[in-house]
Image 1 (cartoon, rainbow, N blue to C red):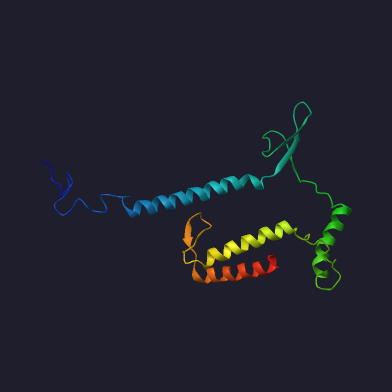
Image 2: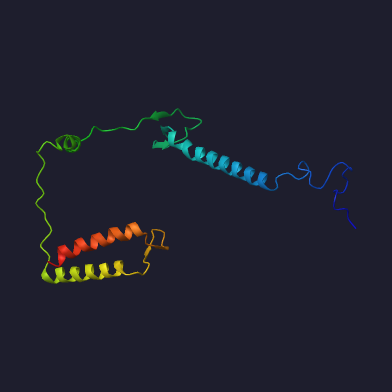
Length: 179
């Protein structure tokens, strides 16, 4: 039968749980994997960013065609090409001026009045909203503990302060829609 207290070939002073003999186990191995994973991710990101700063070279090949590449040829002199940028158009300049000047006009009384208003609700809409508001008030004033759907999709009981606020809102809606 095998001795479980000491690994084979170990001296009497070494035990099976010697951390030197069992590297990368338990929490230390997870930490090592996390660190190595983060390091790998960082190096991969740097490798992807390296070509973003590459220069573009231009030269003529043996057939006389112009060639563009990120790597210069070994046997031919190549020139570094700088990208040409054009100045913005007059329309783009005017648009930019209008966007930057608009916030300065706010609050000076020069903004346009809002003319788009909601149309008056029909009597059928008023009646339907009145009924919904009355039903909501009855449900809120009942002794039943109400539940609501949370953002994560779960259900939770409606807190008392929120229930009281909804009762006030329902009473306000009844006065608005039922008169």
